[in-house]
Length: 223
Image (tube, rainbow, N blue to C red; front, side):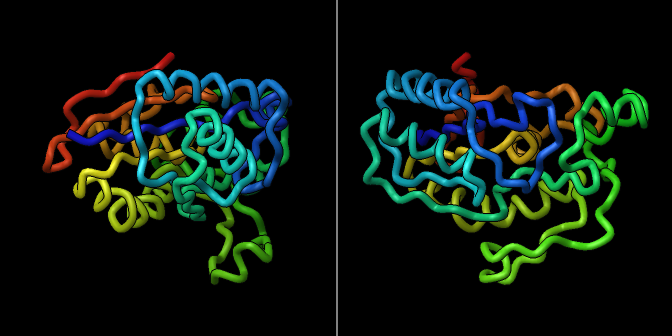
């Protein structure tokens, strides 16, 4: 039996202000840092020793991962950062207040963009350029549906996380609401029209245990 723990980052400034964020690099709030530490204390009680930590290239997830590793006394383990674990790109919605967007487009449409699998948010007219992505040859999306987010997430799962689990090495993922929902959809085999019912709260650890063939034996939320 091998264990995977997945955790969404603590509250960010954009979460606090109800702003669409995506790939925008916003910091944690004080509450977010406390949520990260609280998540770590829950994980520490399980006495799991991790071989690797996987996170995104965004500071809210990176800092949460660092807080967790420090609190559980495992700061020595490798932390791998990948754009494939970044939050879903919200395109032209980025930077706008969610309530303002609801008033403009309607709650039903916004719900499809935020929680549906196939719905694509309005796209940017031009892709952003950031050194962190330019130096690794990654083109920033104009926007992403959850389906697109899952498509760029799964290669990282298949190449970097699943092999470690199959080798009996416990893994920790600290990422974002959409990327974790995309992974949960894959692991739990959730239908496209049911994924809108899945929510991952800030700082909420979820523990998966797998058998030798990477079939899910159990799933537990540490809420």
